[in-house]
Length: 362
Figure (cartoon, rainbow, N blue to C red):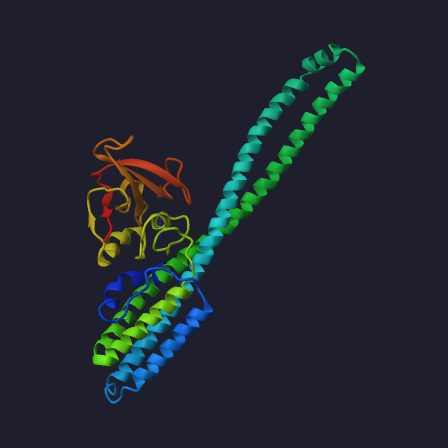
């Protein structure tokens, strides 16, 4: 069970670095506009020219700053490209799953209708009943109408069987398309997590190089960093998830679902969430609260070998949740009607041994 209004997964965690005199990350997307981006790039070019003109103050620092800036920009572009690939695949997976669900609902409805028609057909075509229907007819015309009705029922059965066969073929095709796309999304999710980690390292290096600047040069460098982040945020593709930080996980997984419910700026598999969230400054503990992420140990409470995460909906005593228990929603848990891309619900004791802990807000 694996697995932005901010720049990318890692940049949300790096916001503190950027706000210490080295610029800041926009907290929300602006509408992507070539004119806006061009204007920002023009402003950036002017600032770079201004920074270069501050010689000899930058005679030592210039090369270090440029090298760090170049590495950061290159890594940033990789993150953006991988995020777009993941978003595209997630959108395709979501579309396929929606179509699969619709087809399955149609099949269920057709099967129910087929059962009713077959039952009616059997009743109307029973030898005794057909004979009785004909013999009880008032005249020949009525008898023929009754035979026609029986024939129409048979035709309806044939039509429903054909429709079921067509829908069954479509479902198999959609299922066949989902697996390779999901495997692709999962692989890109892994790459994105690793690339974002490298981006954080480059970001730290860039900020360290900026820190050697003093006075006006430092102020100009901070403005350049801020513009870089604005441009990146404008170019950032919209995530499929509806969470406040987007969604950087493969569609249908427990991680994807939780990230669609609340801000999850970190990456990694479910068994890495508790540590990754702590590293980004999120509060954690062992008491459930509504809106918290519940993290399970690998194998705990039905979790897979790489853990499991869920979203706390309510804590007892509340509604139908007794004291000492909490209600969670989750995805990709095979129980209670759940599964891949399906949301299910469970009530668990607060102190369940399968729980590693709960992730709260910062």
